[in-house]
Length: 147
Picture 1: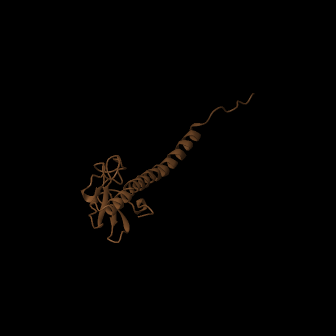
Picture 2 (picture 1 turned 90 degrees about the vertical axis):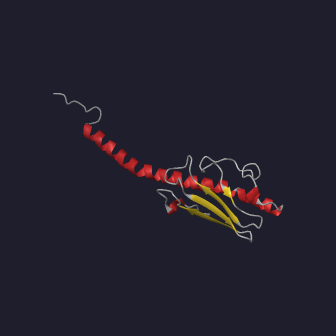
Picture 3 (picture 1 turned 135 degrees about the vertical axis):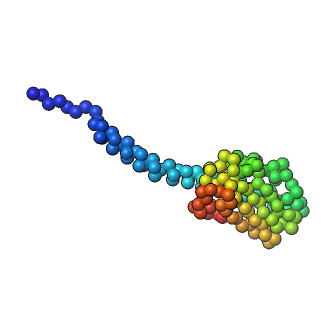
């Protein structure tokens, strides 16, 4: 009698492969979501930090940055990751104040409601704070290295 050769995979082999793929997906998907949240926080920090140059220029010219339009006078382009599209600028003509952005819009659900605040002191130094605010799943790992 001839022995028949096995063709294809058995059911148990297929079930093992599906289980391995499921385990890998269970690990990879949360890591990917964390990566997306971190990259979005970094993007908003970069967008808001670009305003520092425009604010410094206006202070040198004697203008009050808080009275200027963020888009037309300071050159900010709307962001789909910031509530309302633009940050708020409260830096006065003495050079003291904040540039603050609240994440929302198309931002990851884990970081919606968090805030990024750049604060300018009278001596011209800038500091950065990224805080949870109303973000439901904020992690300290989302804070950019420059903050």
